[in-house]
Image 1 (cartoon, helix red, strand yellow):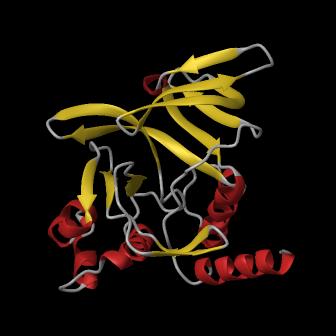
Image 2 (spheres, rainbow, N blue to C red):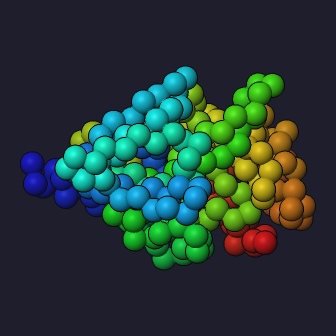
Image 3 (cartoon, one colour):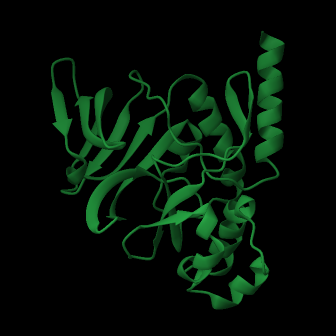
Amino acid sequence: MKNNFLAVLCLLFSVTAFTQNFATPIEGFSKKKPSYVTLKTGEELVGTIKDFDYKKGLIDEVTLMLGKKDKRKISPDEIAHAYFPESGLNKIAQAMDMAYDATTWQSEDINQEYMQDGYAYFEQSKVQLKKKEISALLQMVNPAFNDPVKVFHDPWARETASMDVGGIKVAGGLEKSYWIIVGDNVAFKLEKKNYAEQLKEIYGTCPDFISKLGEKPQWSEFPEMLFKYSKECKK
């Protein structure tokens, strides 16, 4: 069992060491490690997760235990951003996602130590959902290189083919859609099938970069290209 676990870790490092990818979307939360929540008021809360309520795939309410008897229910509308700890094998995958990013970390607004320790970063964003604009608490999947473009997990997205080793996703699995925020604009949905048509919306602040994507930009290269874009076209 130990040898198999070490083999998984080696494979994880071999994958993340040579590719720039998005963070693995959170699937399970730890109820033992502390969560760090910053409210719009500036108040900072530290507590363990008691429960999450969902509505239409989005987080609808967060319940934190701030003490043995101090239970607090928080609406996503109150939250500016938060760090939630992943549990079990998901935590290992999240930490491995950050292994390469740690050497080239660009974001000054996100706590790198939390991310390397298996936390997922959530941020409240305005989302254009059909004809309605709503506020949603979404997981950012490019926390290490989120300027000038932020990419968020789409709870309704399907994934491309991936590979699992010992229950841990180690390759592939790029989602077929993401929520994208360019600068201070409202988030829009980017789908794999429309990627080539929306290059200007994503990379528009640096038009010369678009020519580097070629005539047929590959969806599988989206994380890598966005990483390069963040280095060359940062605000």
